[in-house]
Length: 141
Image 1 (cartoon, helix red, strand yellow):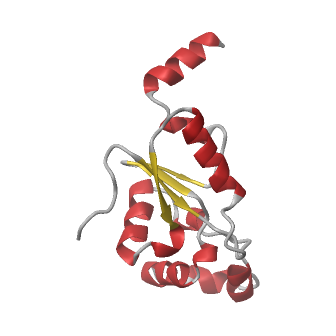
Image 2 (cartoon, rainbow, N blue to C red):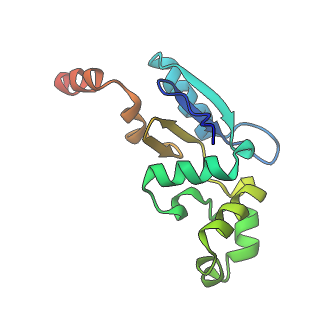
C-alpha cells in the first residue's frame, strides 16, 4: 500500500456541507494554520479510501465513534432510533458505511504524522504548533 500522507506537512481532510460549501470548522482550521504559518495540504474527506480512513482511525487511538457525526441526517435516519444496530456492525461495516455516506464522517480531520484532531477545538488545535512556540506562549501568561 502506498501512503499518501506527507511526513512534515499537516493534512486537512476537509468536510463539505451538502451544499458543497466547506464547513465552518474546516475554515477555522485553515485560518489557524495560515495565521501560524503552518504549511498544510488539503484533501477531501469524500475521497478517502478504505485503507486511508482505517489507517487514520487506527493511528488516532480514538474510538471509531469519534469519527462519526451522529447529527448527520444519514446516521440519524439509519441508526438514530436504534443505536444497538450500529453497535452491532463490524469495524469494516462501519468504515464502509462512512465511506458510502461521507456526510457521516466528522470533520475536518487534521493530521500530521501521528497527531490527529477530529473537528475543531481552540485548545486542541494548538498541538500542531511547534513545541517551542507553545512553551514561549505559556511563559507569557
